[in-house]
Structure formats: structure tokens, C-alpha cells
Length: 100
Image 1 (tube, one colour):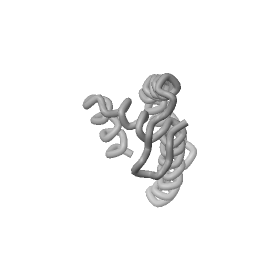
Image 2: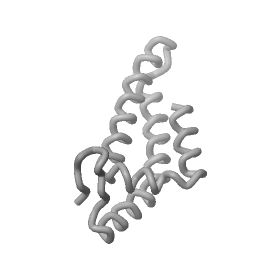
Image 3: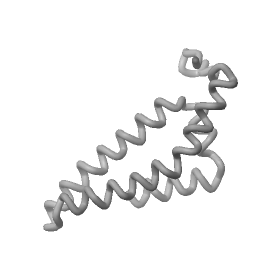
Image 4: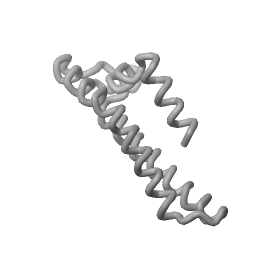
């Protein structure tokens, strides 16, 4: 989780967050964030059980951490949506699709 948070912080500091959202499509970014949250929650349950920490407490901490990540990314996601709407989509030739 710490590595993931550091990666997000680096992306934000380097100004790449908005670019990634525009290129990857907003829906894909949201799906990736939800998938990472689910993986981290499952991992936290397993680790909490091994070290004797309440899994409820570990999940609560993770929910707070992801709420912070979602807050940080939400403005960029909304800006990415607006930009894509104004541009009429992003050409994604390398994936063989055209943005909508």
C-alpha cells in the first residue's frame, strides 16, 4: 500500500496524473483504482490474520487510505472527463479503438 501511495504521489507531483487519465480513459482509471482497492483489502485481511490484528481495523484503515487517494484523484478525473468531452474523445490507435 505504501508503494502504491508513493507512486500516486509521484504521479501527482510530476503532473502525469491528468495525462494518464486522459490517455487511459476515465472509466479505466476508475476501474483500476477499484481493483487495486479490492486487492489491497484482501491482502490486508490475510496479513491481519497472520499477525493477529483485527481484520475489521485493517479494513477501516484501508478505507481511509483509499478515501484519500480518491479525493486526490477525483479532481483530475473530473477534469479528464471534461477535456475528453470537449475534444470528442482521444484517438487510441495503439489499442485499435477510437475514444468516444
